[in-house]
Length: 171
Image (cartoon, rainbow, N blue to C red; front, side, top):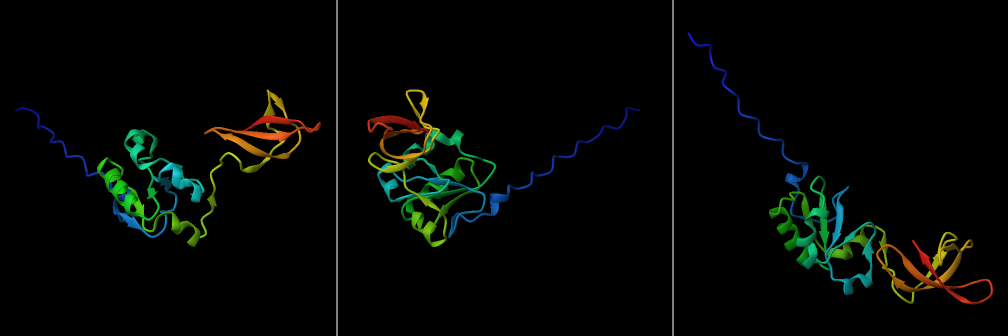
C-alpha cells in the first residue's frame, strides 16, 4: 500500500500589528510614534512639534517609502481635518498604525510637548565654536544672524575679531 500522505496544516493567521487596534483619531500623540506634520510651509512659522517630520500633505504620496510601517504615525495639521483624511488614506496604503491628532498643532503646548520655531533669515542664533568660515573653524562661540537656512545647515553672518562680517556655516 502507498505510504500515508501528510496533510499540511494551514499557516496560522499572523498576529495583528499592535496598531491594528489604535483608533483613527487620538487626543494626544501615540507614545513612540513618528510625528508627521502635514501643514504647508507657510504654516510652520507658528512652530513645529519637536521631533516632527515636516511633509506637506500634497507630498505624502511621494514619500511613502520614508514613513515607518513598524511603528505608529501620529499625523497632525493646523486643526485636525486634513490629518484625519491623510491618516485614513495612510491606513488604506498599508500603514495600519496611522492616527490623526484631533485638535492639530494646538494640542502640543497643552500637553507640554516641546515646540520649535523653524530657522529663517533674519533670526539671531548662537554660533558654536565648531562653525566654519571658508573651511576654517571659527574657534569661539558667538551670536550671528541667519542669512539663509538649508535642510542640513545654516549660513550665518557674524563679526570676526577685527569687526568684519564673515559668513559662517553652522551644521
